[in-house]
Length: 124
Image (cartoon, rainbow, N blue to C red; front, side):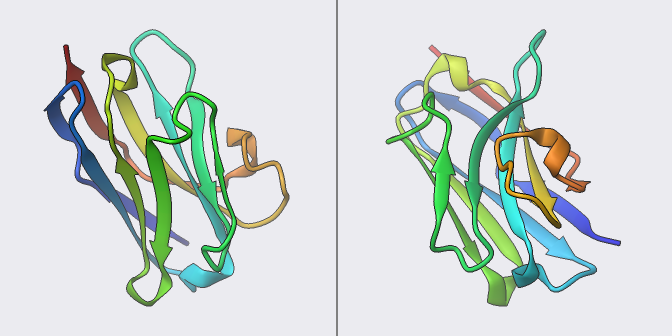
């Protein structure tokens, strides 16, 4: 069993920054690819970013590319999402997720474990 806990959400003005963290426990963190998803009010949950097991390969949705940076520290069992130049449309609940197999990093169906989510609100 894997437990994931997101922290770092909050209220920020447009143009500001936030860093989300996802702490994991229960399995060897470095064995798994991971990702961040988000769900805005009234919308489906969508892919935001993903990172390989060793942190060397990253993927981003077009909507966050160039503004968000995903990273991980396997020694600390923690994954991060640095969010810069935030926009009101980035307002959402952000979820971290862990994928035990497969390569479809953009599909939430590929992920086996999820955190409870952390709210990010960007005011205009």
